[in-house]
Length: 167
Image (cartoon, rainbow, N blue to C red):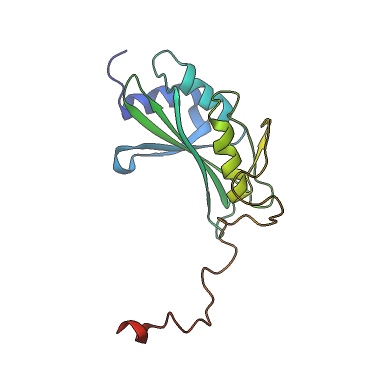
């Protein structure tokens, strides 16, 4: 296969997954697309094991929370093909009341701790994960601190008023 580019990668993905991937975009040159939780394992496996693509390095797994959206919780995967020096971002959106997605730790061992961190901060359950428990916060914590469920600051604080800063 010749040099892998974003258009050729989109073409290969749409040929394989057709309508199972959507919203391809290239912010800052990084190919980004969305898929569903039912197909994420198949997409990740294809990207990793396809002999022409070889996205063998899982850079990151993280979460996002958009409380105003119907599917409020997102899981973001960043993959890197070291052979072609190209990256891709995959997004999967889930309902906030049941954020459950299959684990990627059976494809990449490094996904283990990334998924634990994402669970710890966003409450996303990774089905099939070998040891899904808190990794950075205390075990007794009942909330997920990176969700946008609480105001950032106390509105009654007086030390943050603009007139203290010459505004």
